[in-house]
Image 1: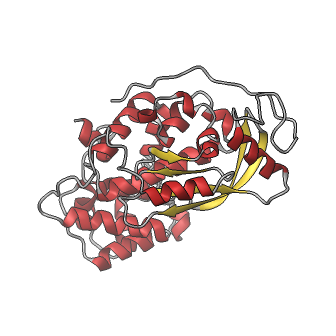
Image 2: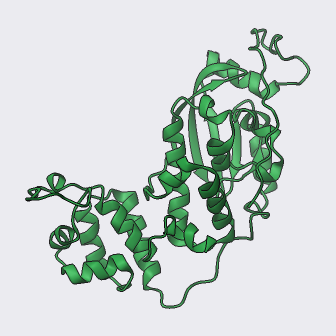
Length: 325
């Protein structure tokens, strides 16, 4: 039951991942969005009715109903594209719908492709990547697995996530952190946007490998422990972010805004390098220096940094151990 719940059946709804995604997206599109009259009477659905979407996509209501219920599992590429257009999906969502359709069409379930269970943490990091992390200092940088385990980091890359270093290494997962760590909600200026992005990445992975043990264990844990995660998991959002700017209210360096870039590491099972940047000579760059040298000679909590700037008071969070599974 845990695996079925993880793969998209939270809340007990039946059907395939394709059907559940179609239902979730249909609920987001109103008749007005697609130029249809609302029609008489009370609408039981917040979005399009099945018959309305079927008409827009040029398929029969019976065929579309079978798709949603998992009775039909082999839609043609033209049908998938027609549904994507009717649902007003963007490029990322359209690709996700195609992946779900391809998976639904496979007659025999595939074996999980994950590198292992929750204890594997996404595999090892190439020594060259470890050298790269070190060479990027003082820019905070870390490597995350496909399920966002933090599997390597330079000092600033770990300390930027305030309080994460208090957790045992095997528990250091970015998604777990943003939903369950008491410091996370205050750390991110746009916490709601952060949690949406994290869930979207897991949802995208669930569309192509829903039975993977590393993903299933994490999702089952968060569905149990976080109502916010359960709410967003049911939204089926697959839009992630790979670059931009983030504002932090950090207990050590105060309010800072860093640019960031996320890069997929070729030849790995979905590992990504996430790096933060700021122009040299700016207060933000000095904040990076302070994060990088925290606790080292030349910078003490509440003292002065290596560049002579007054360090912000240092606050620590009590160790929080989140049970795995």
